[in-house]
Length: 116
Length: 114
Image (cartoon, rainbow over all chains, first blue to last red; front, side, top):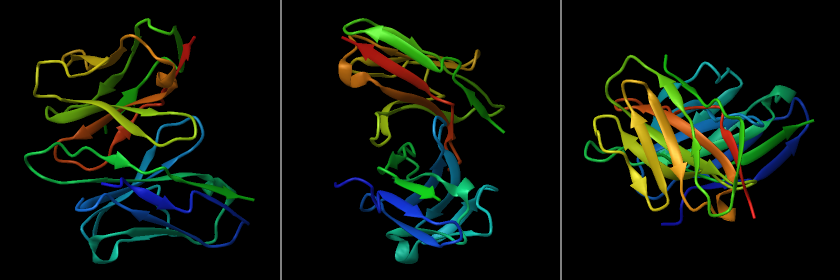
């Protein structure tokens, strides 16, 4: 069990550029979540997948944001036409959905995005 | 919608002493889970402890224990024998049993002093 991994760990971009982040969940975890965390705040939910299906999206996820999880394994989060307000830590988490087990989410190290 | 409130933005404790972090929440649901996560500086979020709402017994994990008061909607974390490595931001979080999204509080920055 190697844990949840995210790439890149840091990304600096200019306003208006597109960026893409990747998350690899814990193997065999069928649920994958994306959160956004701004400095000094708790994470806020963006979206989640069960296997390859995107089942819920927050109102925080504007049209410039898109997430995918092809084949139910890794996931990507793309932000188009970045704005300075997009600067934040983007956290990925995964869990194993099972009626017998609590749906505990395990987090990755995050990708820190800075939009200049 | 549920809310989670952590009323202590910062706390400090001397090494080896005990400290309690507070968390209250608001929900009309009866089935849910509560969590405490720890986020050390520049490091990833780590699960500290979890509590199922249907269980009356308070959860414990080594030096960490909770005081879960369902009627009062209170979920505090007690850290015994504090260690320097406990220095971190601590987040309380709520999850519906049938849900998916964690709702986090604002966090409490805990500093353990030598």
